[in-house]
Image (cartoon, rainbow, N blue to C red; front, side):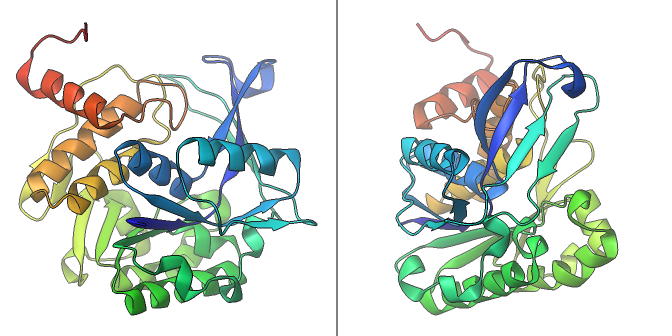
Length: 304
């Protein structure tokens, strides 16, 4: 495996575009989860990816597992819990109105992740281990599992990438500062929003690893390098951060300079926000190359 990700994957029920959640009668099924989004993005870009996590032994869990496998993601270590349910996410989608997101994850199989379920063999040979702040916020045992995963990554010689991915429905700011902020010091790569760093009370200049900051104006920076967002029509902004992470990490894994990593990250994010769910816009390698050419060279945009 090139990459191992560990975290929550839920069944996503997405309301028909433009219809408020309370009025929607038609929903489209998909997968939601920060780590699984990054896994799908990296898999489409040609990387071998393994997903670690827990699902319920229910129809939702079977559907999530099937969709992950369809992306070519290795799920052999997924834990199927016969008693706890798979988490569910309901949301609507609108380009210019606040999006309503409802989580049904209390007591889910994912929240019961524990450190004893993670072994050295799961990360052996991996070049990169990716996790987000959502996992340690799910429960005390999930936080212990996150710490265990970071230890295993170090022992395996893998780089660790970390995205705070703050979701305040999981807890107030002070709990995020307590549980998640210390983990940024243990990452080789931190991909964080400017507002997230402010909320966590973290000075990016004092972190020991590489820090990629996503700014409020939608630009991103890495050290002295800065990348503006590509101007595209936005159908749905959800999933942009995970798409950005997949693009940047893919560039790193291929040994590309950081300016190229930023450019590819911005392009993947620009493609994802033009589609109404988290993963439909994720490109393969050829699709990313075509998009970059269109964004940067103002050439022919129709692939004939």
